[in-house]
Amino acid sequence: RHPEAWWKTAVVYQVYIRSFADGNGDGIGDLTGLRSKLPYLADLGVDAVWINPWYPSPMADAGYDVADFRDIEPSYGTLAEGEAFIAEAHELGIRVILDIVPNHTSSEHRWFGAALRDEPGARERYIFRPGRGPAGDEPPNDWQSAFGGPAWSRLDTGEWYLHLFAPAQPDLNWEHPEVRAEFEDILRFWFDKGVDGFRIDVAHGLAKDPALPDAGERLPGSQHTDPHPAWDQDAVHEVYRGWRTVANAYNDRVFVAEAWVPGNDRLARYLRPDELHTAFQFDFLRAPWRSDSIRAVIDDALEQAATVGAPATWVLSNHDVPRTVTRYSRSQPDHLVETDWERARWALEEPNHDLGRRRARAAALLQLALPGTAYIYQGEELGLEEVEDLPDDVRQDPTWFQTGFTDCGRDGCRVPIPWSNDAVPYGFSPFDAEEDTWLPQPGHWAPHTAEAQAGHPESFLTLYRRALELRPEFFDTPHPVEWLDTPPGVLAFARGAVQCWVNTGTEPAALPEGSTVVLGSIAGITGGLPSDAAVWLSEPGSGESR
Ligand code: TEU
Ligand code: CA
Image (cartoon, rainbow, N blue to C red):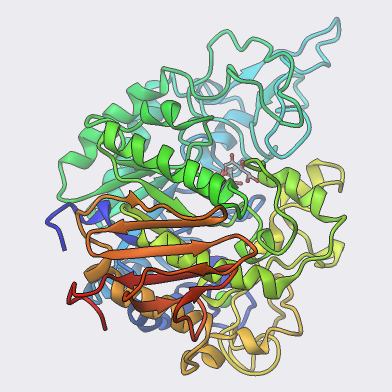
């Protein structure tokens, strides 16, 4: 392995704690469950975990509504258990990245409570404004919540407060020095407990144009305009320069920005030696299964990595977007997709999950062969599909409510993980659990449990384990991506003496003569690469074959 900082080449596993593993039988994932699965994560071979918010929360947005940034949600466990988890993960060589949510707090955070009681100075920490119109009963401006509907709610007192997400997530005022000091202190609190880094929720939020002007016409089909006075404002960079100073006082800590800004140029402004170390590049998960689109996305990401000096990041899915298998299981458009539009288009087309799985396996080999950091969302390694037929009455995502039940939201990728056994809850909860899982699992997941896949040579899980085992030697190297000449529909590159080939087309592709297949997305690949498959190859005589 090259002697780079760990986070430049890490494989990071995203744990959506609520749905990972339930230790006490209340149907909700927790720290006992997570700790019991640490050996699984070590076997899988990941370098780090990123845990979605685990702080006390009323769960209006599955924990992204934080009531106390210095504690742990009681239904997940205690602070002491969190510390034990960090220590146990470290013993197994797994780093721990937490999720910090600086754009907003829960409406049940003590600061918002003080604001509601109109304690002196308390409203200044949030964004309160009088309404418009003669009676002040229209919102202060035209901003829309990312989940649908206006971004303002009105209190009994007649004043309005801003929430770019759910009404239970009031936006903080980042011009306020107390807000800045508080978050730097929260970072230190967790760094002192040994946490290795933070994923920064909506890192392009926080700073708003102080005049709070109308945003104007929205982009076609989107919630946003570009530019938008609530997003990607220059003032946010000063916040991160402060955060970087905090992180630099510790060894080897990392920030990864979640910033849905249009294009890598805009993202690059966050990735500076005095700001954030890395950021998710989401174009990979927005690319259709087409060699030309995928190659363009890879080139763009690598170009940015070279210019900015931050590693490229490869994300196939997360807890906000439809699962990879399902994304690839329908006809593929010829352009990058907006993930929330996809759900609407998909209602019109039956998924072919076998096809989706075949492509997702190939995509995994591609992802793990690229230079930089790779993120795996829990269940991706099991080949889980989006659960699209959740009953309406179990849906919890505020998107579902705030769009007036027109966008079914993100619950379908958040269904509890199937670990073992033939029936629900598939070992997610203990066998004598008192409660159903917080979202119901499908009745047909028995073949997809981790246990069913564990010893199976052709399973998804085995493919991931094998790929992660081989990655350090084969692809975690300083060799750059060198594209190879390929027929249409085929994507292939060399990195030193090893190659990755992906066939998104309909015809089989000839592989280089004399090369050795190191790992294939499907079994039995020899001379030709079938449609929707991928291989890792070593060149003849390179001595790297296995
Ligand atoms: O998501 C940020 C965000 O911009 C989302 O609205 C995203 O565009 C959408 O989910 C795509 O469908 C982060 C978290 O990842 C998300 O889970 C939270 O709901 C949100 O912030 C608010 O904290
Ligand atoms: Ca539990």
